[in-house]
Length: 333
Image (cartoon, rainbow, N blue to C red):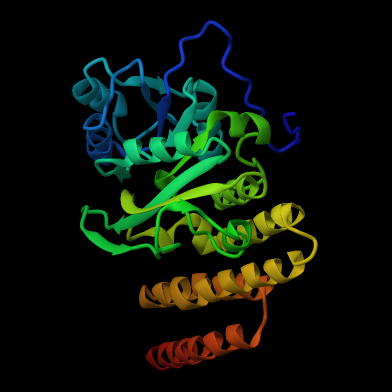
C-alpha cells in the first residue's frame, strides 16, 4: 500500500502499455550548463542503449546558461530534455524528475556531478542479486569546481553488500551524496517524493525514510563523483541559518521513522553531529571570509540543535577568535 502524506507528492506507477527501460537517469539542472557536458559524457560512456536506459535532463528554468544547447550538442538525440515553464525550486524539480521517469531503477544525477565507469553495471548487479533491497549506493569521490579530486568519503564497510544497522547510522549523519544512490521506482511509488517542507536536507530525510522500510546495499568501489563548490558556506541558506533550521525540521520529521527503543538517543546524536559540523567547518569558513554576522547566526542556530560538552568545547575557540576580531575592529575604527 502506498503511503499518503500531505507534504510528499505521490508518484503514480508507470501506465500499462508504456515501454519501460531498466534505468531512468534523470539529471536535474539549474544554471550549471558549464558542468553538464562532463555529467552527460560520464553517463553516455556507459550507455547500454535507449531500450535499457532513459537519459533525460530536467531543467528548472535556468537563467544564466543554455542547457538545451548542451543536450543537443552532446546528446545528439539520445538524451531527452524537459524545461520547467517557470522556476519551481530544486525539490519540485526533483519531483518532476521522478514523475517523468519510466525505468524500474531511478538515478538522480545532479547536472554538475559525474559517475565513473562501472557505476550502472555494479549497482544493477546488486539490485538484481537482492530483490528485497530498496536502494543501492556507492562510496563517493569529492571534487572541487575545477574537477580535481579532493578526498574519498568514509568506507561504510570492508566489502560490498547489504548494510547492517543502516537506519541507526544514516539517521545521525548525512552519509550519502545524491549522485551515488539508485532507488527502485516502486520505492518512491510507495513512500512518496521528497518532503516539500524541506529545502536543504530533503535528500537526507528521504534516505532515512527508505532505510526505515528497506535494506540498502553498499558498493565499496568509489563510482560517483560529487562536486563541491567553494561558495557553499556563503550561500543564502548558510548566511541566514536556514540550513540548520532545515536540519532540525528533518530530524523532527524522521523521528517517527526510528525504533522507539532508541529514537531519542539517535535524535540527540544527530542534533549534536550537526551542531559540531557547523562549529567545526561552516563557522570557521565564515570567519576566514570576515563574515562575522553570518558566523554569529550559524552559531546561534547550531546551539539550538544541541548544547553538550563536545559542542561547548568546539564553541570556545570560536568565541575567542570572534572576540579578537571585534577588538581589532574597534581599534581600527
